[in-house]
Image (cartoon, rainbow, N blue to C red):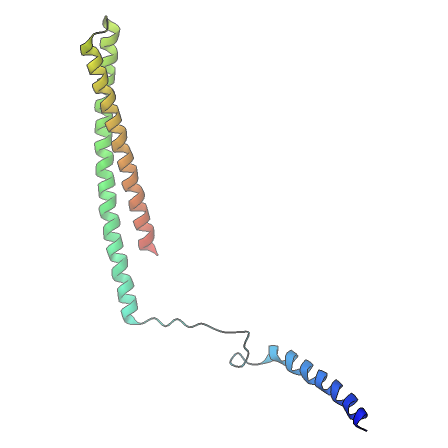
Length: 139
């Protein structure tokens, strides 16, 4: 008799496990452990803080953009001056023999070109910084 009872219990246990596991998917969200909702509460102070941070970033971005524009203008002026010097040195070198004075003028023209390139690099770096700050402010 005990043996027959054990045979009846095993199918019942499997049936219970099947019913419980398949019913799990149909339970309401509060009891279903697979589905969870995260709530992120935002207070008025949080919003004010984020707005102030964004305003500060926009101010920094504006300043960086103005600095980039000023550096770009300065780089343009230096490049034009360097170009003028290079043209003048080239004209003088074609006129006659090479002298120490002409070599010094050529060296000065080369240095002016290097300084103009350096200024362009600084302007590009400032523009990239302004772009980054603008992107951060938009977030």
